Image (cartoon, rainbow, N blue to C red):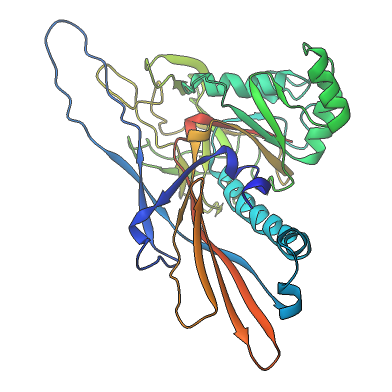
Length: 400
């Protein structure tokens, strides 16, 4: 199963030992610690800051597995033959489900580049800025967004793209700034490998969204000033729908932008701060919508500021991409952006076999019971896990 993982293998994985004895259940929660972030002092005078551990609760909400049975004769097969017949396909399905569930978190990612409705990696294109999709600028833009979020350049950045984007990207970037060995690997295996500071991977589990019926701009405005640290905006305008995963920026009626800031130095990146809508909404008068990130004004002594100014009443919302359009959410990320948490399931008694194994942060359980009437072994394989978006500034969606 581990070898079939694509997204999960490149994400932070944390195994919780606290359930090793009694076993966890769906709904159990573990706390994942976020890295500490402090403000910088100016001058000679010491200014002690209290260390504040920040945790993200991770709910173990998914119990997935495969069930099957086999006879005594089949059990007598060699390990290699038994694995080939029964285990390989089932492990691939479980791994695919884990990856798919994790990639649903892309709908909660606010950094976004690419063009809605246009496969990234294609040649040409007249779009500008973050809307560009031609090779290789769309991936360089994604890397820029990670840089703006102070993502480390430590060789661990990854980029997962769907089959369509993979085909276009391999064709569009083949031979471009690559050594002969890399070009040969692209030709023989039909994949990008390592390029543009990303380890590329193809994953058919990349999620999609359908954007809301809202107009790109001119329809929805802020109804009141946003509250610092609050992920709720009061907006007004029309009766359109806003989809979960819709991304927008905020600009005043006079054209003053609400820009993002670098989290390390609190200085404007020169890029509009993007906000993602975290639930679906239908506009009706003044409507409360939930967004990420919660805006915090950057200032001296502030450790976690993220905007150059707070969104205020009458500010205009400009949405990313055309309305009512299906778009894949390919994703560029650092492993520390996402966390996969697993815990041990309970081991039942009174069965033929009950076993758990933990490998590379993933706990898997197998339970086997003998059916004497039919001379078969009923077998179930389970994994209990949950996903969390731990550091959203370390990832970026690439729309297609």
